[in-house]
Length: 138
Image (cartoon, rainbow, N blue to C red):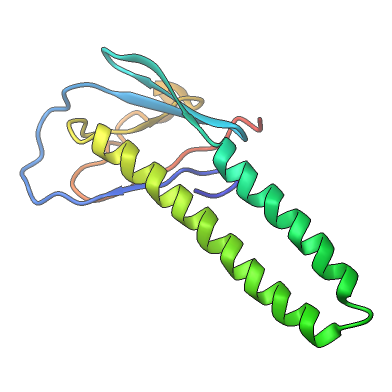
């Protein structure tokens, strides 16, 4: 997941078939909203990701205060905590996208909620690959 895209990668070694339904996504700062055929609206909470970034923002602020008196220690700590933040954010997003893919195992095509069907005519995802869409700027 990036600032403006949600990538869901899947791999399948089966013959293409007619989809059993559809699903559309809207990616915002605080959640990923899905509308699924036959299920309705599902929201995936991103507050945990926000918390990771806020916690490490505070750590960075404290480490930066050391920069003047202990520059070497400050640099080492900044590298350590930046890597840790990146790993925790990546882990959160990996778990979220894995959960979404498992729930969508029966659907063969993915659509961006904001683009609408006319934007995607004839662009079906089959087999392996990824599907992404623009964010709502939220």
